[in-house]
Length: 261
Image (tube, rainbow, N blue to C red; front, side, top):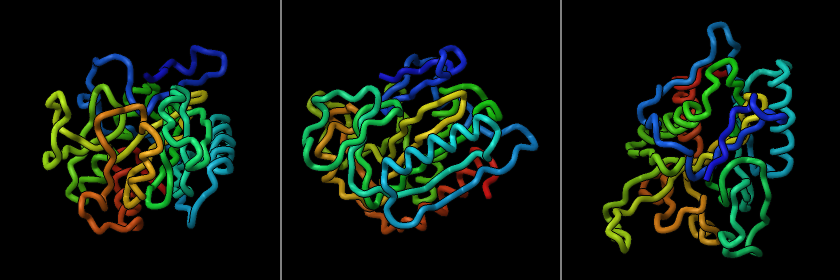
């Protein structure tokens, strides 16, 4: 379950949003605005695509330093697109029993909300460092905007991504697969979200599965969700490159969040 609090209401000014769920059901995230634009006159977001594989610990350290600088108005907002070597991350709600194969890959405890997730080659990780004070101090609306960004990006490849009110992230229906034992139709997760806010500046972000090794998710219960599976653009039969996805991510980010440079 997510822990979501007003960052202004606690001494550290911090809140975490899980990659599995958000508390409350009203209003529906489908009913929230699909854009999360900055105040007029705000500078563009700095867009950076990293080459190769980025070490996780170093990336998180640099991200936290930048988030602090943004909160102090000493740096522009930023989005980093990276790939990591194979690893698992444990969010603040991670349950020990959900780490099925503890010796398989390195496990990094992280301050984002959520449970266990996997990062690795073929998965685009987007670290999103935005100042919500320049936009809207509304965590639920921010998560809905991240989902809108992902859904619009998937639509560029003719993939229908959907929200679920009880699970953060983006899901794809799989009618060709047998339903669950209780008759629930099968669906697979194609994108995960896990964020943290400090002084209303976001860090961590989301990941979208382009062509990762899906068997690597078997070492965890992804985001604590059992029953449903994980998919990727390649698994759905789409010969999409990371560069193709990056172009779509950038174009749709500008629609949802505003200009980049």
